[in-house]
Image 1 (cartoon, rainbow, N blue to C red):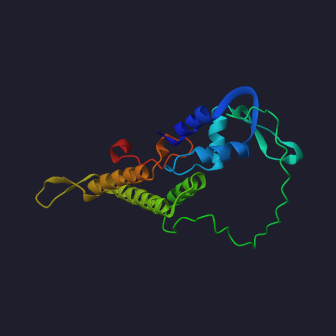
Image 2 (image 1 turned 120 degrees about the horizontal axis):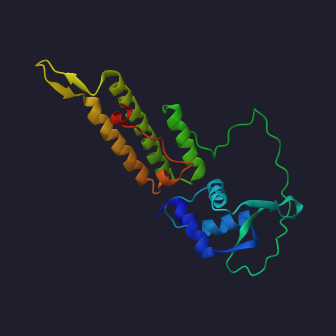
Image 3 (image 1 turned 90 degrees about the horizontal axis):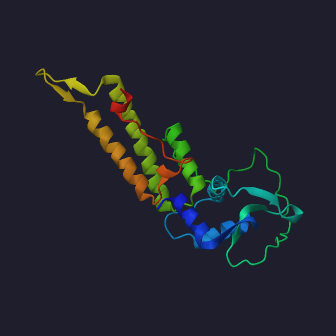
Amino acid sequence: MTVYELIGRFIDDCCTIDAGATVPTPDLYRAFCDWWPADPPTPSARLFARRLHALGFVSGKRTKNNGPRLRNGLRLKGDDSRAVVDFPRPAPAPPTTTDDPPDPSTPEPPSSLSDGAARWWREVNADFELSTHQRMILTLAAQTWDRAQRLDAAIQADGEVFKKANGDWAPRPEVAAYAKATSEFRQLVRELGFDLESAHDHRPPRVATAKAKR
């Protein structure tokens, strides 16, 4: 079951769909995190909100005193009251400057990754709460994708076959290495525990086969 399908199941299990209902978005996300199974990693609040919007549960007005936004069309089951909770207004955050140190909680990808692989690495870390083990697998997947791209570039430059000394034609070693790299990439993504390919906004970099490019 994909991450998006699990979000839909949460709505079925824990929410009542009602066009006139609203629920504070933080309350809804807290209930979602409590309901979420141990594996795959819990999606971020940003991904959760995007999926709710895609399903038609749009963000509405804020609660009183500039509190959290409300999510329209849903009510948590067991909440018979439709009264809006008056959340206290949080204290303003201190101003930041360009001299502030980077947030240590925000991981950065290895410098050896290509721009495309590094961007995907950041997106997955932003949308999912990864353990150290899962982040290591993600790094291996990104490195494997880069290796596949280098092999594919060599195939495009030199062709898929070469002529041996005896005059026979044979496939270049890069062809088999490319097939192995793409297979390893798919296996590593599956090992992460969530179906990234089904998430339209956050699918992993697609590796085109050499045959498809011809």
